[in-house]
Length: 309
Image (cartoon, rainbow, N blue to C red; front, side, top):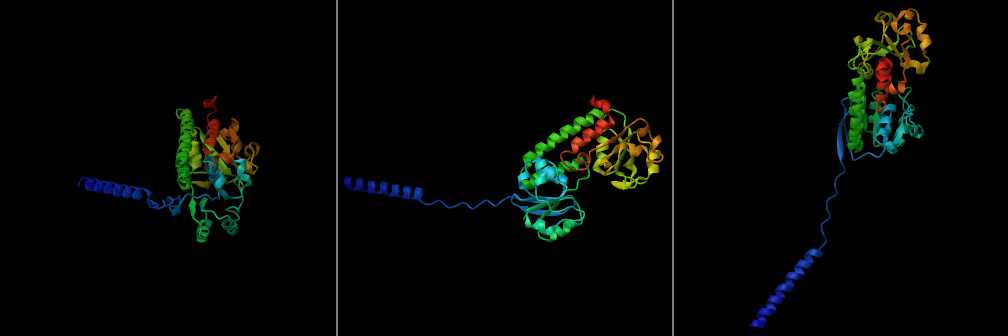
């Protein structure tokens, strides 16, 4: 009787062992693959674009956007740029697909197979989207808008942490510059964008990021009363406003300090009489990208040199 009980116990143990070993050796079910991340972006035109996965092939259709991508370490993902993207040096060797004027070569752009196209506002945006490409528009109106654009690109490219770090650094620099000029007087500033028509030069008005730069740099923009963000102001208005500082972004188009002094009626402007007419690097002040803070510092140094001695 004892032997039968022993045999039964041994059979029970063996059976349990076999079941256990079988369970451990059975093939484990294959987990379902994690779907690639997707983001829905609301761009600066209010357009909604859903981007599946993290794009590795990006087209940049503006110098400012190209600079943002490189600043975020994404230069190796750029497969096409506009004709004017020239910073940093590596951008000059990238495939080029045209410019807003006279236009972009859509066939050449499509041939680069971008997963997302980053662009500024323009009539060509709808044409690009109609060809089946995903387009996100970056068109900031002020420095805060530039920061948001950097974070937007970081979200699209999956480098949110790096984008946040860059924005934090730029904000610290901006605040430090603004702090230097905050308690100082606000001299009247005329900012000239384009004087192809010297009697009606283009300037920066309210709502433009150039206007916000002038104010942060400690100046009072005489174009603040304009009807739009960028507009043509009459020479008479400039003369009557008597700016104490004149900043020339159009030096890139051949305008010089001497040519401004020689304009009819401009000789008596305070900025001219005291020699406060300064050239400005348009690449720093007109491209809404990371180097805009360099432009801010350049303007602050021109408007308030005493704060940087």
